[in-house]
Image 1 (cartoon, helix red, strand yellow):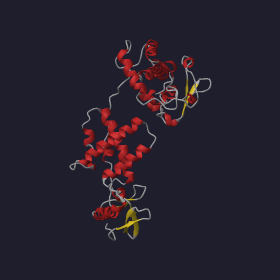
Image 2 (cartoon, helix red, strand yellow):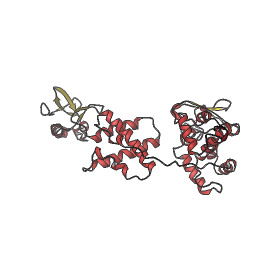
Image 3 (cartoon, helix red, strand yellow):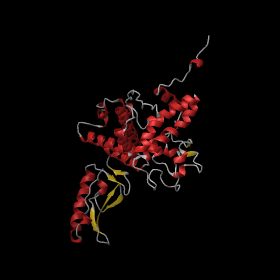
Image 4 (tube, one colour):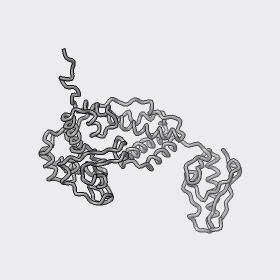
Length: 354
C-alpha cells in the first residue's frame, strides 16, 4: 500500500508540529513516529527546530509505509496498513497475558518462553515453523512438557490475533515419570522441630497436613475473612484454588487453638493487606531443610499434604471424600493421585469369592 500524497508538515495552535497524510482517502495525523514502530518525536526539540524535525518525521512515515511497513491505530495495536510479522502477533498475545490476573510465577514462565521465542526468531535461519527446536533440547520430560504447554497457550492466543499457525499444537507431550513427595511417618516429631524453627512455617505445614491446602497459593494468600467465626472451617473462592471451584475446608480441632484472628481483610501470614512473596514458604523450607535432624530424603513441603491424603483415605476408604478434601477437579484426578502414592484402591475382601 502506498500513500495517496506526500505527508504535509503543520504547526498546531500550541506550537506542536504534526504530519498529516491520507490512506484510502482517510486522513491521519501523527505527532511522532510511535505508530510506525519508531521513537522519533520532533516536539522534543526547541520550537524553532520543530518544522525541520517535522520534515524528517514526514520522510520517515512516507518511506516506511511505501516500503510496506505497518501503521497502527491510535491507542490500540489494530493494523491500519502493512502486515504484522509472526513475532508481532506473539508479542501482542504475550502482552495480553501479562494483563491477566495470573500468579507472578505463571507470568514469569510466559516471560521466559516469550524471550526464548523472540531470540529464536531473531535468527534469520529460524522461523515459526521450526519452533520445536526450542524444546527438543530438553531431555527432562517435565521440562519439555512444561515449556511446550506454555508455548502452546501463547501461540494459540497469537493465532486468534492473526498468526497463521501454531506448530507446537502438533507435538505430542512426553510421558512423565511420577515423582513422589515422600510421605512423613512421624508427623508430630517433624512438626515440633519446625515449630522451634519458625512459627509461620509451622502453621503452614500444619494446615497443609490438617486442611490439605496447597501451601504456595491457598495458604500463603489466606486472609482472616476466609475463616468462619468459630474457626471450624475455611471458605476459599474458586479463583484462589487450582480446581477453580469454591471450597469449604474443615479445620481440625488441633489447629484452632493456635489461630489468632485479626481484621477480616488482613493476610494471615503478614498481618497486613499484602501476602508474603510467592517464594516465602519455599525459602523458609530450604532454610529449615539445611538444619533439620529429622527430615528424610525426598520429603518436601508437599509431603504434609500427601501424608494427610493417605491418612484420610486409610481411615475413610472413600475416594469421594478424598477428592473433596484435596480439592481435585474430578474423581479421576484423585484416582491418579492414589496410584501415584501407591495406595491400593481395592482390599482383599473386595475381590471375587469362590
